[in-house]
Amino acid sequence: MSLAAPAGLAAALLAVPLVLWYVLRSRRPRAVVSSTFLWARTERSTRAAVPWQRFRPDRTFWLILLAILVGAVALARPAIPVPAQLGDHTILIVDSSGSMLADEQGPSRLELARREAEALVSTMGPGQVASVIEAGQRARVVLSASPDPAAVRDALRSVRPGQATADLADAFTLAAALERPGQGTVVHVFTDGVIPAEAAGTAPEGLAVTAVGQDRDNLAITRLQALPVGAGAAQAFVQVRSFGQRPIDAILTLAVDGAAFVEQPLRLPPRGTEDLVIPVEAATAGEGLLTARIEPLAAVRSDDGTAGDSLALDDTAWAVLAGPRDVTVLIAGPGNLFLESALAS
Image (tube, rainbow, N blue to C red; front, side):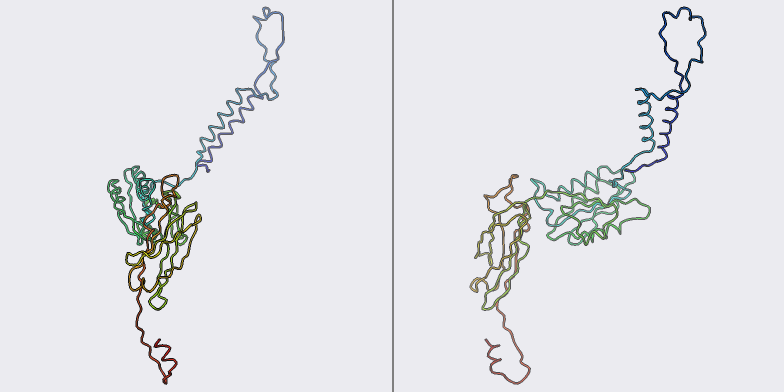
């Protein structure tokens, strides 16, 4: 907390004359007499007043003192600095990564971000402008410095999520390019995650972050790679992760050109990762498309009714299986029967 006008505290000095008044005010001693009839026509003596009294505060004194102190604090204008909601130029950065498609019991996270941004735009006043930046794999400016709230809402509705992560560093660079000298610029970012460390260094000063979505169960295939091992066979390297806070049972299915050849049950701990190496037989491999899919068991359901997976986009991954290839080897040097036989095999 800070004081916008600290000089206003000087009004508290009015408590000094209040105390002096209570000390110096006239007080006459009381005496019990049988009758005041004989004093009715006598002038009141001022000598009976005692000029210096012992300080005896009463209820009135404390009420007046409280009023003086409250008034002094009010004149000092106490304030708590908070980020401005809107500036002369407000830049709205909307995360359009694949995770924004996650279901939030009806609306997606992107829809929740749009609602938050539209509520902010509805408070725009005369002379204020707003810009919209879509933070996808490559950030782009959707709308630049528009004073029309309806145009800003249309720009927000045009944001579409992709399948990659959001490049917030690129979005912050675009936001800095949109700033104009002499304008008070406020930047808002709407995202379902935290600002990465590599992007935090380019974040504008006073950045306002609005987080959308909840920490929900989600299964994802985060890696799929197929490597030939010879004789037409291959190995599939699969990494499966759980982003939920509870253990989850799931089924991992691997298929080549749509024909499943592996259905492996998995139990993942909270925030757990499972790395698997699965052989692909020569009869199955050949040249084709390897598909990996993870699905939670239907019997495992959380309290909100979701079956342990709030984002379907990251449940499937693909890799190309390469068939055997002929390799030509040139031997530079004299002939070697053993080397030629080994290479020929």
